[in-house]
Amino acid sequence: MMTTRAMTVALGFAAAIFASDMAQAASFDCDAKELKPDEKTICDNRALNDADVKMATTFELLSGLLAMGSRGTLQDEQTAWLKKRQECGADAACLKAAYEERLKQLGETYKNINRPL
Image (cartoon, rainbow, N blue to C red; front, side, top):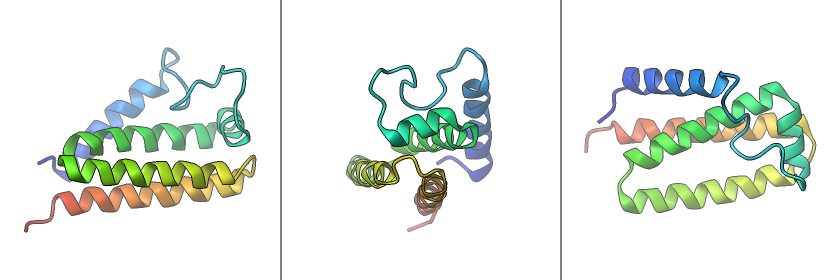
């Protein structure tokens, strides 16, 4: 299992890659013609963009660490969260709160992986 330190290093490395000029900004295409209001706000707001990258990176890392059944649950939770995020529309404060909540949830999921049975 990945230790907290290893997870931190992995997230830091991934964040450095995403922060480079060559990397895609958000976890979706900000150049798409028909962005939803939440996506447009995320693309236009650096802090939200960074939160989106951190959330997407954390989600992908967790997906690789979880067993098959747990992966399905994680995906279902992510789909529900994306619908909730979309309900924020262009409200940056709502989007910020949504990302903070989701990152906290993903952190709890990670903590549960490291707990002995």
